[in-house]
Image (cartoon, rainbow, N blue to C red; front, side, top):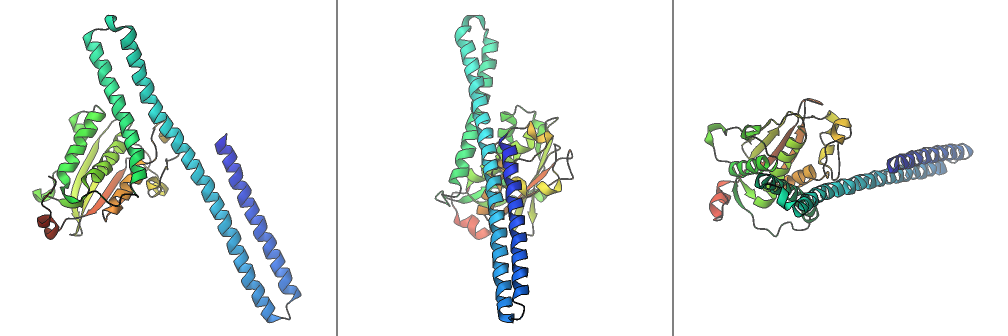
Length: 314
């Protein structure tokens, strides 16, 4: 209902803008015709007319953007509510079962209940941390200390965490060997980079509903940067979504995406963390149903930084 109402409001603003521009054009042309003998007044009229048109167009664009932004925020709130409510309800259900039927449940079943509750609590914690990180990212630039980080070790740790979180077999997510066995180091905040890599891996798993097959690789790019590419075989993306998916609160429309829950913050955090480290994040896809590749580009730590930082992270 809210979406229909907002679409109606957008259509109203567009119609109002078109009518206003048309009226302004008619009035300006009429004014010029009436004052065609006065060249200076005609020029002044054209200038004022152009300013009026620009103001109307900017006002209309601003109003439409605000409506769409509010729509994304409402979708975000609904998604966060679901992401918080679902694991809480699950944990509560299993706790009530354990409380009421404690004597009738064998030890094996209890251990399974404990495993599910821990998984739900991890999901709950991940959602809360993601929301908090989105709020803190722009505020603490950056009080945390930076260090030289072995990117391969960090990615390996993140893969292990993702496999455990989603109960996946080891071959579901693989990291290809670095060419030449080179150790690739970057200079940054390990906590934030870990968040970025975890979000990319979680997205790759989440948007591979049929089977998870994710391939990660590290490579040097233009001698001064390192790229981390994460390729999945999931639902894929149309070309017009490559940039939009990094916007705050944005969720890709479509039936294939509607059943996949999320807050719309994961890739927004990825891009912002990469940019705050002097890099960037991009997305490509052969098309819907053909998988997606997310690439994070970061500056390589130079030799001066490596030797000057005693607290290097391995």
